[in-house]
Image 1 (cartoon, rainbow, N blue to C red):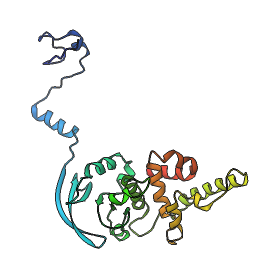
Image 2 (spheres, one colour; image 1 turned 30 degrees about the vertical axis):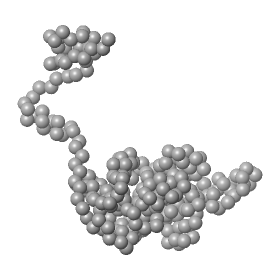
Image 3 (cartoon, helix red, strand yellow; image 1 turned 45 degrees about the horizontal axis):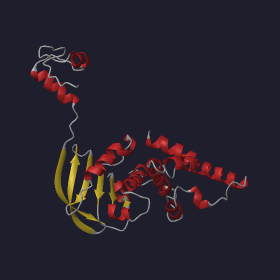
Length: 259
C-alpha cells in the first residue's frame, strides 16, 4: 500500500507519517528572510515572457495582418496571420528551442505565412540590413513529398548562417565547405573506378534541388547545397544516410552547427 504524507519539515514524524516515506523523502529546508528567498527564487527561475500584438506586413507583394508573438523581449518573434485556422506558434517555438545554439543565434524572426509559392525563403536585402528573419509557408510544405515545415525552417536558417551582412555567402563560398564537397566527390569517383556504382554528378549533391540550383546562381553555386545539407543533417530520418554518403560535408556541417 502507498501512503501520501504531508510533512511540515524534513524528518517530520509528528503526523504519524509512514516511516518509509520519511526516510526516503528528498525534501530540504533553507533558512532566510522572505525577501532573501524571493530574490533567490527569482534568479533561479527562468520565466519566459511573451507579448502578443498585431502588425501589418507586406509578404511577397501582399499586405497581411499578423499576430506577433514576442518571446523574451525580442529574443524570438514569431509572426502568424491573424486568420490562421490552426496556430502553429507553439510547434514552431518548440522546434526553435530544440535547435543547437548556433542555429538559434542565427534567427530571431520567423514569419509563418500563406503567401508565395515557395516552401520558405529569406530576403538577402533584409539580411544585409541586419535582420535575421525567415519565412515559411506550411501549406506549401504539405505539398512537398518528404519535407516538413520544420525541415524548411532548418534550410532557411542555413541561409541565414551562410550569408553575412556584407552580402557575402561566407560558408558555402568558402574553401572549408568546398573542400568537403570535393572530397566526397572523390569518394564517389573511386566507387565508379572500382565498379561499385556509376558516378553521377547529381548524386554528389545533398538533393536534386541543390543540384538544380548549382548552375543558376554563379555567385553562390553551393548556397543551396549548404542549406540542404543543414536540413538533411538535422533531420533524424535523413541524418544517418547523409553522413554515410557525405562524410566530409557532414563533418564540416557538424563543426559549423555546433560551433
